[in-house]
Image 1 (cartoon, helix red, strand yellow):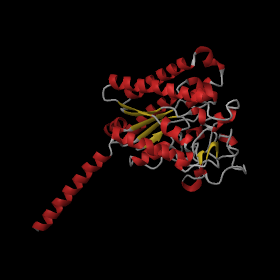
Image 2 (cartoon, one colour; image 1 turned 90 degrees about the vertical axis):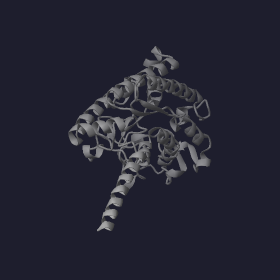
Image 3 (cartoon, one colour; image 1 turned 30 degrees about the horizontal axis):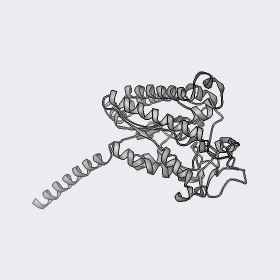
Image 4 (cartoon, one colour; image 1 turned 45 degrees about the vertical axis):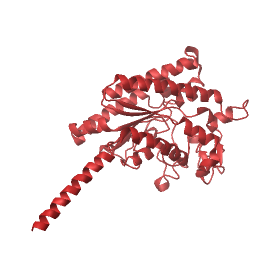
Amino acid sequence: MRLICIFIALLILITQISMVACKTRNHVPAVIVFGDSTVDSGNNNKIATLLKSNFKPYGRDFEGGRPTGRFCNGRVPTDFIAEAFGVKKNIPAYFDPAYTIDDFVTGVCFASAGTGYDNATSDVLNVIPLWKEVEYFKEYQEKLRIHVGKEKANYIISEALYVISLGTNDFLENYYIFPTRRLHFTESQYQDFLVDIAENFVRKIYSLGARKLSIAGLVPIGCVPLERTINILGDHDCNEKYNNVALGFNAKLENMISKVNKELPQLKALSLNAYDIANDIFTRPSYYGFEVVEKACCSTGTIELSYLCSDKSPLTCKDANKYVFWDAFHPTEKTNRIVSNYLIPKLFAAYR
């Protein structure tokens, strides 16, 4: 009898130690995503926009070979981040009818391909503006409190990891395409304008309970295949002017992050800067096992994305792992994995 009591006591002790270890290992109960096509997992499928990717060949390397609305042949960075934190393998889109609030307890994506910090950017292709993503976040909070109770919901909201990734479209699909913003702002002033919006966004979701914010800067945006294609005078090389603008924006974004960390109690905002790793991939593709960087896998790899990236094109590559880019604007799953593996240790250091 005594041996049985000792055995039971040991089991209880081991269970308690395991529970403490689990909590120590993972202080992130959910991953919540805001942004654009770099992290959209399918919200654009359900809105009235031409910017969609819920058809083949998109998703051909995703589980089951199915297009999900991710602008990729497979998974996007937030999927890898969520998996690394042991939260879930893939982050579901808020608008995806296949998922319910039960699925969203551990993670949800509000991102919309084509959007930006600037409301005018979302108007270009009629996608979800950032302020509306915040409104859906508020709606999600209400559903979450009903589903799991107020106390647990507040814990999830405050301890969740928030990933924010946008800004590219503000420059490439708005500022450099249409004259409106250029008439009002120099490049530097537009950077300031966007960073001010980013700061207001941070303060808004902070007021809604968010505390662990990882905010992505820009990669070398002048090196995406579409920009190389139209850079005729530059022999189809990267547009270094755009890359320098991205660097300038990143520096201002990091200053803003430092500022809000000092001003907002308990906020742990992190600059998630992938510029250097992306630039290294673009300049040394073979080091990472890539064969092609200047063109994308889909179709001719020069201008195609969304509906132009057709499953019927005989030119689409057979092995996307040889390519840095999937379509003329977005990386392949392999690139996303490499970039994510570079960023995850920084996230672990900040939030585990």
